[in-house]
Image (tube, rainbow, N blue to C red; front, top):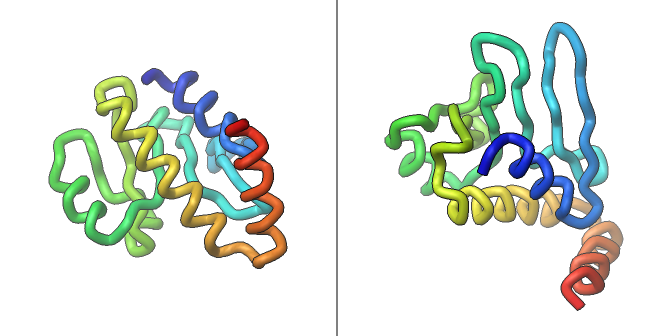
Length: 125
């Protein structure tokens, strides 16, 4: 997957929107109800690094791999940065994105969770 494909996949998830922060942050953030589940850093030295939240177990496993680093400032919350998305296994990356997406949904109010789950069920029909 290249950067545009990852971006399109994130935006294809129900209720997801993208917020772009300009200078000095230069970040494309993917959110559900104002809670982020993934982002791209678009300025140097981390240009187009993709970050997302993973489980604590996967955090240890993934940060041992070449091309994956703890996300700057977010590592304590088990966020990782994939240095080059086009060199990362596509199916595994989709799985990680979906996990991060569902983690955010689980942190929302029950009302919001029901609304999003009904949108997910509607999309799968």
